Image (cartoon, rainbow, N blue to C red; front, side, top):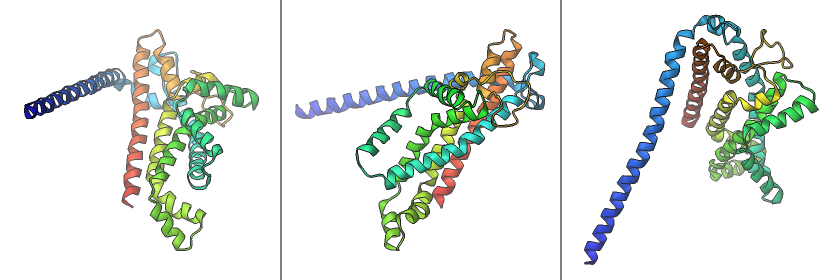
Length: 288
């Protein structure tokens, strides 16, 4: 009797396991199908508009003449500001918290706030950037204000990713460095950072990928959807790819939907390239 009850319980667990497995598979399949349909629709509409003229022309009120040059250059300008600031400040903060900060109430408060900031809605960072950089520091609605705002947005992400990468470095590597006469700074620079570099680079590139695709903070600080000239300094007004795509998608002419789809394809190419670079760098430094 006891054996038969145990057998039934095992069969019930196996049945439940199969049902849950099928349920999770169906949920995943629904997401994949929806993504595939969306990509197919975007490619169908935008592939014919993605040409050299589209890449080298400014935005226009005529769909056939509309291009994404200004938004693409504005995005590159923005990344030139966000990338070094995010990497230097984020990695330095992670090193301090993991290697130098004592386990006291101050470091715990800082750590909790960094973790909380990673989940704050992006529109809040837009309001913060509007208040501090646009109005208080009087940077105006410029690339510099946008770059600093986006830096604030992605800093918590890269700090957390860098901390996890540094934590993953085995402690015996640090002890070996100390045993050979190295001080703490030498150990961090020559042992910890090279070992943690794959995780740090992956987190940095993925956080920058988020910065490229964000729109709400830049809308709040006043990034405009139409600019007739290229930005020539960090104090110039600007637009970026997501804002330009959003502007085209709201146009009444149906042809602008195809132009917006071409912009989406270009944005996806940039994001996939950055993700591929993150995977390449991670694998390269992991082998070393």
